[in-house]
Image (tube, rainbow, N blue to C red):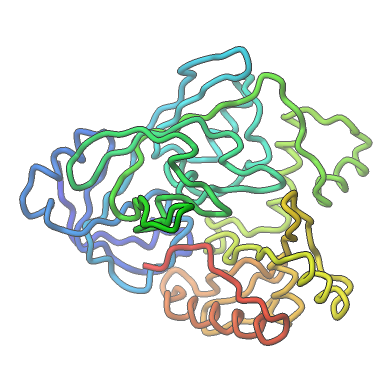
Length: 354
């Protein structure tokens, strides 16, 4: 096991923020975690798990021990009458996994194409796009307790999935009875994730962008590969490539309001983009709210709002003068204030602020 010191992280976070890991260990197998926990000094350190760095904002050098997840591998590990069970190492690139599953004839992840990040981060965030969330295709995951080194497995219920949420984002989750529950933030490292991909596949449609593609192409019954191609085209048109313009993807969660709240907003803002949900609540498009407040294309220092999609904050600085985490958070807070003052809604950031 090699402990690297003062490791530059500018190329390990998709925003391109310049920061260092004071200490870093690369985890390519569970044995690497065991080696860390067998070292008295390393075991005593607080720890920060780093995957693809696509959902973080670094506000300074990272003092906890950084565990850089590089566990690889993709394979079919099981099959039932209803589904294929596919497993991937936590260090695998998410989009590469989606591409591979379609190449292998296992559809179901196509709506999640081109979401940046690694497989291990996908259940932490319960990633989702265009009508599909990770929890819809999740089977189970393996993780290691960073205190005891014990390996454990969680199913969907144990992951406590919510909208861009899971047990891995909380130090403690309250149970339905209101008593303290189980939280795994900073306490575990995910090593492998398994997905249940349906044999009785059905296209998940209904979003305006997909409907537009169907109308333009004349294809009314797209297969999984067609949806994958469309999603890639849509995302490339709307969202900046982090390799070209640093960003962390969608910066704010789409807020959910009651039917009554939505009706009140519609009276004032008839054009607001909204999506009724099955439970009677309504999801509002955070990007529309931000755009309505005039933020698209605006900047604070080297942090800017992407001119094609107001939901995305970007790095307007060059490699030698990149955006700082402080600039990103100053811009984010200014946007939150504007949206709250106009709509009475407090936007919640998606990325983890470190």
